[in-house]
Image 1: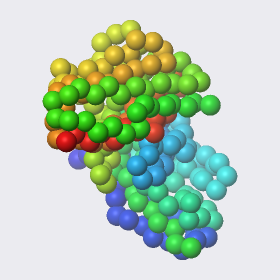
Image 2 (image 1 turned 135 degrees about the vertical axis):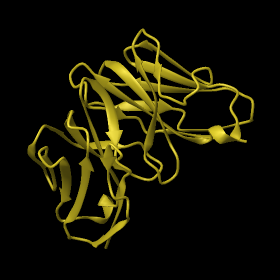
Image 3 (image 1 turned 90 degrees about the vertical axis):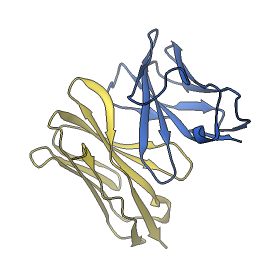
Length: 111
Length: 116
């Protein structure tokens, strides 16, 4: 079983819809959870950073962490065409700061 | 804040030559820098972790003599691809983390290497 599972299937939504992304993980030592956005041919950009369980909101973005289920989510409200990108979940913990990444979700917001 | 730059953004070289890629943290001191490789439509593959002033720790399967990493200061790390071959063509991305947030990594814009 991979440390982090993220369904890479492309996701197309109409502009204004809510985008829902999620990852599951197997390592219970993970405590730090991140979502990165990556545009084509660019480096990943840190979107959300969460420590332990709970919710975090930043503008149109909400990150949720459920450590008991080993499940994290990212929601994008009122999606815009500029949100079209690949979204990677990442996590770390257990005494080192190496990141374990999901495969990434390609999101396309259709005007 | 937390800006990481990479130079060059793209490079084309002949097979057998060496290429150096620079990674700089512009507005914070990076105690740890990471080097990743990314193939098209795939996630990032960690190549090595480097702490300022010490030798890099390479991931299994990454040739340390081929991918030389130097982290001489708290704001600069370099990756040198020695005797590059076409199979080394890839997107190389660095990231940096600092004392303020050891588990937050901030990524550079990446360097696209094409070896002819």
